[in-house]
Image (cartoon, rainbow, N blue to C red; front, top):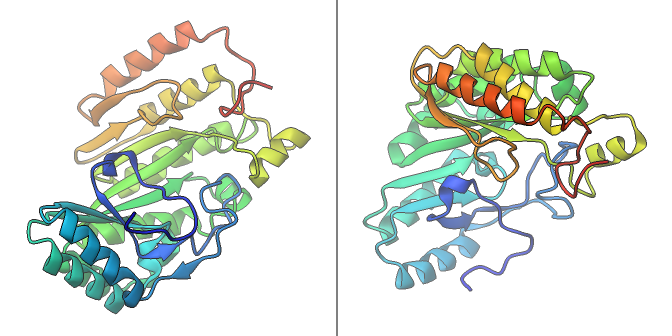
Length: 295
């Protein structure tokens, strides 16, 4: 094992074949009420003295490695100088390196200047994953995301303006039954305003230990049913208005309906598949935690 640091390791599905280099441990924000990923893990930024031996040992075993994902939850919380130093170490040890990517929290992106982001792009950071989660301000406040929808748009647009690819994520059902309509419409609005390179629609999973799961068990948050989750997915796609090609996916392990296409080209096909699924799910109307079964 090259890295035995504390806590579990998380990565986007598309980074399955990447070297996961944990430049931070945990998540600096770590207050989102729906997220279980880094609970119980004290956030810390790892010094270069801790990171470099991991890179060296990995390079001895995998010298031809091509892709690196900088973990944990928000690598961009690190100073630009620290990130540039890490990238230079990676390039020095992996001569065939072709892609570096990371999660980017919206607050961390907003704190970076356009020059910071351009320097990172020029150094080799090519792809940033941004959790939009919701485009609705009321939902963002309730789940303690820490930003407004306007700030989320600004963060996404800053990454694209720097010349990087942006993979954005939305969470179906995050507004519950009460805020479902506004969550869906405003999420489509924000995603369209950003027009990311890739957009993924995940489905809310109410994991044990999260505040939102507790709210659900106490009856103050009512989750959606399988039918309602797919209905939100259909409404989201229907209201997305991409001006340039955007790869769309809903094939995460959390999803009720796996969809794949490119917007706006495949919009009608995606809507047809969603409608067909709704016909099959019309009797599945009980709310679900999407974790260990229905209520």
